[in-house]
Length: 418
Picture 1 (cartoon, rainbow, N blue to C red):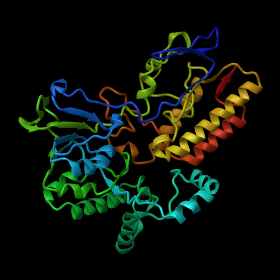
Picture 2 (cartoon, rainbow, N blue to C red):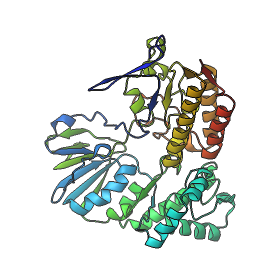
Picture 3 (cartoon, rainbow, N blue to C red):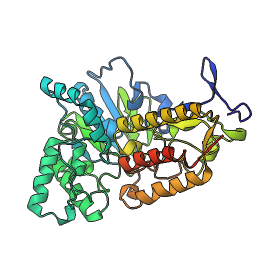
Picture 4 (cartoon, helix red, strand yellow):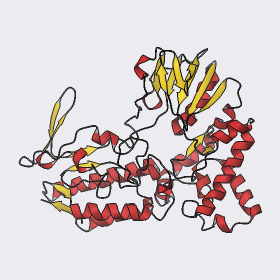
């Protein structure tokens, strides 16, 4: 950023642009994470990352395939790879809870009804805490107070329907440890009923807080481990010893493979932004600004980086809400802000340091009222070695959207305009 000229210089691999404003719509989950496994470069087979999948079809027919990871992308890809591969070996460090997605083609009449009510449904979704509409209305019921019969009936209903609505069963799931454990134990029971081998079922059953990590949705994920050609390898204590030219070595045992898939996630929320080497006022880099963790105002703006907007940045609901709702809300807010700046002939807008500090405190205060920070998750940056652990997303979409509107209505309170 050139403060004298009040403009940004944006360099790509082909061209250089000069612009007054930059909108970083880089995505929360777009910077892939590939751990530095010993011997990775030696592997002679094909390698893939679930976050960088080829555009052309990958055919695993007849191959011995290994996949490292059992997070959300692994949960989605393992059943599909298993349907093709001659052998599939899954290397798991930490099991994750997964709820059936129960995706299905929509009946034409359902499609017509949804299309005829787009505006109504969009408004209703924006009013939901998660930004997600559900056939199950919000309730104030507590899992800790439900009778065994009522609890079982409700959980069965939500499980059979599938999707994220499962986590709306009771209002206290992410705030009360006993309620959370009750729901977690229900899911562990479902895993035990689906996976025939008790030892495999036990390995696939998480012990941590449910919902403290990104919830997974699946199609026949647990059932896939009943197939004779699918093998689960526990690396929770030993990790990956090395990758060899012909496979993966764990605890001095080598698993021979033709192809290896890395389902090792992303440098979430900050990775893509930091990867662009953003340099603000007086040569101050974003990496320096965020050395102790991301610090933004509303997840939209960063002190010392004038005229830079971040779409679904750290400090906004982003990954804890419907991403479509979050992106639309940010884009509309930024659009309206730019129109106001143009109409009022304002050259620069920059978040104040005090506003950012207060906002980070607000984000953390809300998170600390919940169980979200209770486990090692990418919400905290725990999947990236050396990354400062800070709870990055904000909980609660409607209140956040209202706050953004209030800030704008109050003359962009918390921003310095010049």
